[in-house]
Length: 244
Image (cartoon, rainbow, N blue to C red; front, side):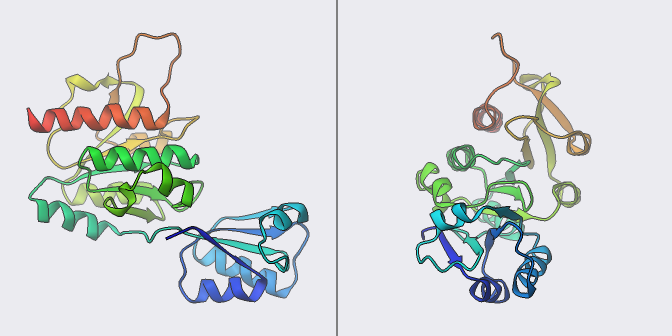
């Protein structure tokens, strides 16, 4: 399925009401009439980000030339839910293994992490609704087909999701340079790996929720890895501990 756009005020409103998975909405800067306010209300209900842009931006994206000041992006793939992911682990007779991403905004990073998740045998990827890249066509291409096999769940609140995972016996570990060396931690059993965004890493509140904080040992001159690389290193340490 390809990423698509919906153009025009009423078509966007009807897309919301029909339950389409809308990633974001672009609205002409300064436009606040009745239908546009309805679009904003529908977006707010579904926690869909709205961005005000110049007319030139909308004209460039539009394929019809009749956007009426409103364009919505529809997800390229359907999202999974947490129950699907737990069921997948159960069907395989494996301890649940998830990768949670906090505000990953680069589609190439997200696609690469989904690909890594699939190769590492993770049962799903968890992303937030706000301040995060969704399942765009770029993500699908970068995942190299992994999106066909590895589900992605979009949740409203990562912190509450961690609480829910803990109630179901899943341990959480986040990657952070102030943690213990990952080789010294027990990463076996039901586990969720938490990876922070490209610039700031895992936020303080989410870090405090995690059961373990894992440091990837490095010897270079800079102090951080790309998010997708960090996810790969940590994910395959979990794989190593599971199979040894």
